[in-house]
Length: 524
Image 1: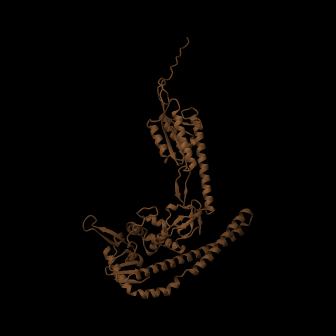
Image 2: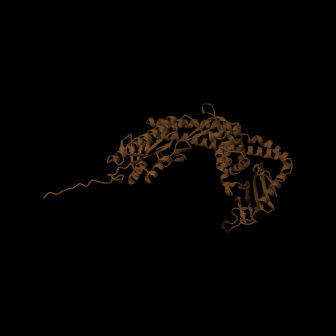
Image 3: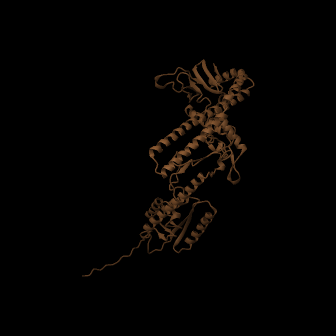
């Protein structure tokens, strides 16, 4: 007996869940993106918007929703694409049934992002159509084609990234330096893109370096510039210690340029990381006109390094931070707030080690007012000795001259460079020819020993030049400030301590020794 089979046709579309018997307009949106801000790309961007608006509106059975756009945004990640992310959200909220875009590469160049997003849309009955590849994601061929196309798009992005990186490093190797002029205090963009000193801004840069040599910290320099109402290079009214530090450590102010200080970790995440030696760097000497003398710049770097261990107090913003030292243990005094929540509130200074390890230092605490009075008293005792100290400084000034040391340093660097070249040639020759390795290693070791000895001598002389430069500049600023004091000091000014005072040693309440920049010591 034959079986009767009756076919029951579907009544609901398995993708859209819409009734097949009842015609329903599909809510359709388009996505347009260009990845740069170039004029020709912007023209393409506008053309895409116009094209897809007409394309959807003229398509029978489609209801136009919107053209979502991203301008000047990379396609390798969806994280920063606001238009794309808005579109996906609307689609998941049921506002869109179909998304139309030019190609897989316009949608995303990251395979993971592309496939995961499309799968998420499919799970919510939202289809995508890629016009160039003629692929509908609900199509049975869609998965295979889409995976293949996304992989190709990602590889294209990799090639673009690698080519861009290669071009950038080639420019670095050729000494082609670019600058963010709008954020670079002291310089303007001149002809052919070269740096030209902006004298008004350069004076501020020189002042910042001088202040640091005088004894100001990053925080105190920032605070002083803010109080004086001097705007930053970007026009902001508040200076931050990080801005001051970046100015004081930027080698471009001495006329040089260090390239590739940071690098992109990978082309997908676009994550930028500080270059701590992972990628080759390029250092160009004498790239442009300097604002700061190299000796002064090096002196500031030396001070920055040496002051790392002197920090004391929140933000190290007080002029007493790092200057008041315990005569018992040698540790810095730090500021403490007593009675912070009532009318008896006051700031006192005491040894940071006073209550450590059950072994108290015997040195007393001082209020900030008391420290200020001790400094004023010591300065007033120093003023009458001004002429005698100036005469002594003039006699010892020749010992601070660095001209001969500079000549010796240049000669040693030249010798070291020649030996380094000779070592490179030996390595190259050893790679090409079958040399006796024992003889090669012996000869190479001799050259390496000479080179290391020269480098050690170079570092010693460079260090001595830096120390002499610092001492000379600080002493000159010391006498300049001392000469400006025509009579006794009656009011405390932080400029006095940063310019005149080296350290304050505390042994007791009546034994406080103020040591000045020129080495003079007053006890009181």
